[in-house]
Length: 296
Image (tube, rainbow, N blue to C red; front, side, top):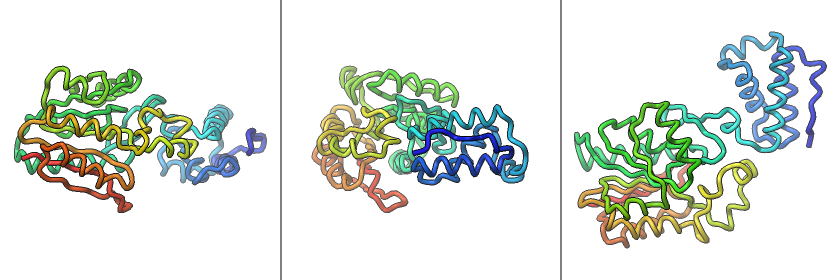
């Protein structure tokens, strides 16, 4: 593994791309050229078009210094999203920092399915009470609030760090959210509150598998947002046990799940005794990723 770079003969953008991608390749980057380009563009604050037409332009010592710093961080497997401080989700930029799980593209399917099934259950309705359990960066609750401004959206998280970051995102994106701190649905149960829609992307990776994750995830993203217990289903069990208490007579439940978990989670929903039908939706890779429960 290479830990130091020699920039003494690097004078242009193209040469910096070559040097940076070589360094990343030696440090086991999955796509070194692509990552090198992203890092250089981030340092220069350029879009891809300007980058491509400026390959022979000179690069300043200040830019090289900044690029070298970022490359050293990337060599330690720090996620690019933490380095850049943002991740796009559902067309909106979200602030992400250590302390929150980085929003994944497959979670957009969860949001899409909530919007789709809500329209089927409550055609034309603009006022619904929604609870997002496990706030994280706020990607789910804020997106729902932005897409449906009339909904009353509450979100719950155990982590103060996550809540702080999510509040920042809500303010930046103009979303009206009620933030509660607590363990899963406990704040709702204590207040005897019921909702029309319950949505969650809880920790679902089995404990024994967490330690086998890529270093980029294991060493930097919060374990609290990853570890779902011995079989990965601990949070789903607790969420489903609470459904009779937190759901209204007509309601919608939506969970993101891990690989090979959809059928088990669907069974937990039905075992709650208040869910009349379930739907399982696959992601673009064909993995059963979202479980929808409907109470009519």
